[in-house]
Length: 209
Image (cartoon, rainbow, N blue to C red; front, top):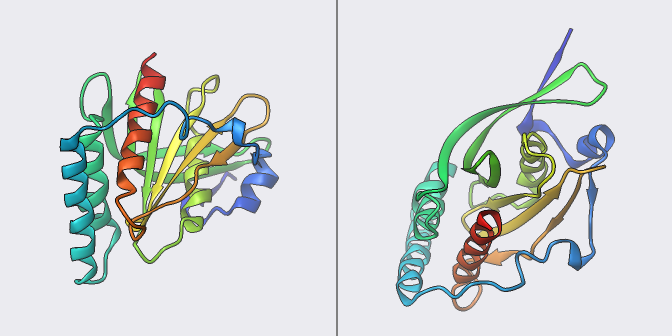
């Protein structure tokens, strides 16, 4: 009988034991979040300043739940980054089943937001409550990325708690390997959403090349 496991209940140990996934610490493996990032416009910065101001306003009215994180923070960033325009399209609450190799097990889950381009999953965004840590979403987003139908190209992801953003790269060829960017924090001086948007725009260029 096939066993069903919810993606939200998966941890890194499970992915290591069943998929052989490995963390890569070599900085050269994931250069896409650092190299040749595009310039953003003054209008982009003005809009991102409003997003940050809105975040701090929302903190005054807890709890800051997942749906609010998406509506007030993630969706505006995707809009500013042109992820709603051709050739990209966005799906929300996308169902996903992942078969565990050599096991009669199916991992089931629903992805918060997926941005598609020609069947390449450019961005899987797992939004969490602001009180959650990035670590709580990492295994879940990696499980979703392992379910990508494209195996010969890298898959990129973004975990966003509202207070923090971190990018993920997964390469599935041979044994699956992943790496993380640094964390971008709302409470840091300045506005690190500028960097988040620049990385998003860089990924657009990479997959559109």
